[in-house]
Length: 248
Image (cartoon, rainbow, N blue to C red; front, side):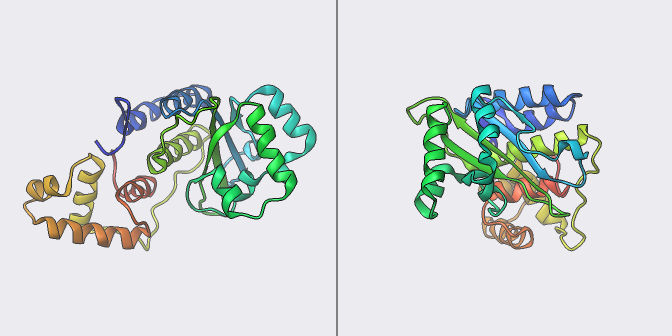
């Protein structure tokens, strides 16, 4: 299965979240699944999204971060220097917090900010940006409370869960679903191939199911990658789900 974490399938999450009726229940389900990846501290922020009520356009919209840390964060105005928050507004893909320290010229205050977060129990963190139309800026940051790094590293899969969470949250808030880009369309065969990819089938399996060669399966996938502007199977499936091109 392509989307699977410790016996819990991504398809299970899609099905369950489509039936939940409150944001609180949705967040509880989401945090439970992310805990299987080793991430026990999660914060969901929507700095800007015109499709959501104005009251939902804020940092820390939903979270289970330590209350003392969040109070301190707000009192000190860390929003202005938070490297993770700044990266979420510019990155188009998931990233690790430690990458920001290694590849960006952070100020001494920003580096100190990370150390203070670790003291508060926010370690081995990652950021998942979720950009969209109308200058939407949203993202999820998550961390482990453990000193030893025992988290799983499959960021594409985690991104899939995050995007499904966000789509479900917007549904519960009455926001209009994301419309399929009129300029992006998949052929019938490309859709069939991607649908089987989403089901976790290998290229050999897909070729046998559809009666085509593995080379042809690969060709269809490369066309899909080009159309969706992605470079791997997981990202292709996630984006296709978000755009409504396939269903699970």
